[in-house]
Length: 532
Image 1 (cartoon, rainbow, N blue to C red):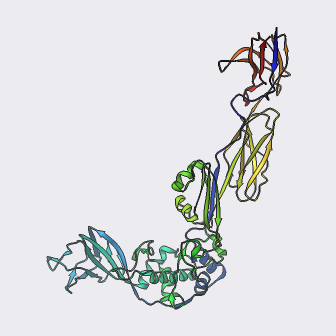
Image 2 (cartoon, rainbow, N blue to C red):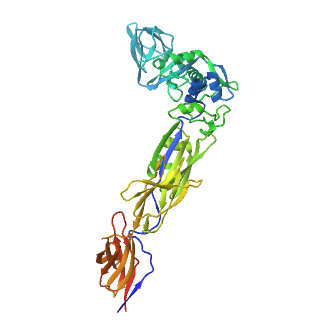
Image 3 (tube, one colour):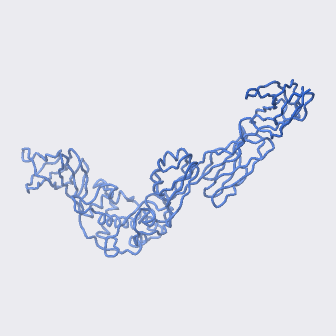
């Protein structure tokens, strides 16, 4: 005679424990502005001139508070056009001349010459070696370097077998080749004038001293394109403000400028590791909204993608969360990154640089979901997540082979976290979503409820499966050598009930139901057969 003993164990799904797991977080980066945000904002200046009719003097005082206009202390600059070259091509469309360091002057025909460190030119019918540095002077047409025309003179110097070319040019003529590359010439004239004064001031204050040149022809100073960049309207703006510079405390001001502020400029100490400057402070910039870069994004990254971009800044383990701390200029002062095995904190400008963002005025949204990965039919699934994004956030679900549908708003704490309870009736994917995008899906598998209600004479098992499904496969399995072996099979009727005939030997058994159609396999409580 046998006695059947039933263990009081809750039915579980077969694929493992029901512990919570997380879908990888989705990070959403959005921001404002383009550039460092310090000083004059070009789109904002355009807006003040176009929308309010403000003068260039008013615009400059707005972006550099407490400053006045004064006169430039220099009239010419030296621009390093080329450096460390094996050779250079100098020419002109009209006859021109060259003078060497010994004062010898030679007339040269129209056309071009190639010059290397030997400084030899063909003049007066013979090849002559010049004493460096040498100075080329124009005739009836502009001098050209590499086929590009420039105002002023060209000085060629040698060093260690290489040659360099420096353009000696008047400050105003230099600006002719700068301003149209910094601001569209079609913009309002008062904005162009403000840009001209800012560029003039920046050229004066940023000059290198003690060397053979003053400024670079690129973003290390200001982009300078020579005659080919000139435009009539920007030339007119430069002429109308000739000699004007921005002054503070008797000195020419550092007139930093940028494309787009995002709606407010930044104080210098809030962007760079610099001491405060009285006129480089944060000011409102309401007309910045006309810029196409006023707002940008969203840019979406998975945790692994973002970790690769951040490199050494990434904490150990999987990247789970990012929190941005802001300064008084609304720029990102620091970013705290939380990983599964640690936390790191770094400067907001470092994050901007690693991701090549347009500005340091950015936010990082996080959409992530974690919770139950498997429940038995009729049980509730506990979900929790992060929805740190602007505006509303909500929970969405997709049942097995269905489409996504919204199921409720995510009621968030101040930290952006939330909790939700779901009662899935079949395997369901959940995600948290917002206007910025949708997070990655979190799967909650649903296993059928399997109950044994009767064991008849040790030969027949009777029970039911929920949800009630006709034709569901039911297997009776016996634990043998650490593995489950099927010893009998049956199917459910229309009410979900089943009856399985099996000869029960001593051992541990369970009944397993497989419904398919988006359900995980479900198992009954275990029961033992003990010989008496």
